Length: 150
Ligand code: ADP
Ligand code: MG
Image (cartoon, rainbow, N blue to C red; front, side, top):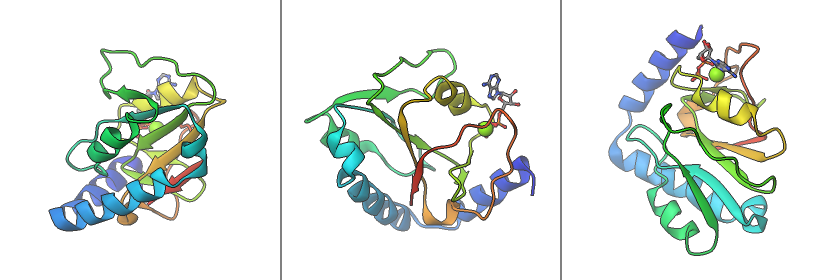
């Protein structure tokens, strides 16, 4: 399956899940993140304010700001994201991931551009369980995450 077809396939899968299922899955993922050693040890966390079809990060952002420096990404091409310190952990969404850490995005290459400039930071991809696939189709510009949590 190519990238375009895989995006469509996964969006269909997500539409087949209820709001409740997405909320439940999001809660489990955010609990894993809050308990994660890399996150516990980091002073700075870079993450995104989730869109409707993504793992819901809103409550987690509210928790993290109590204890960490939080850099919130807008996922907009118009505002270039800031460069975090090297010990910051970066949490990114994806339409799909595979267990090599390859990531399929929404097709604009936003995170490839951003993560490509942050070779030293630990990167965690988050997605719903149905977004984990055998193999994400890749191009040479695609940037991997170190770990996927779903
Ligand atoms: P996504 O990662 O959002 O699924 P793609 O990997 O298909 O999207 O990338 C979309 C487009 O973004 C590519 O066709 C490419 O032109 C552009 N792109 C990705 N990474 C870079 C980069 N590091 N520099 C310049 N353009 C890039
Ligand atoms: Mg890509």
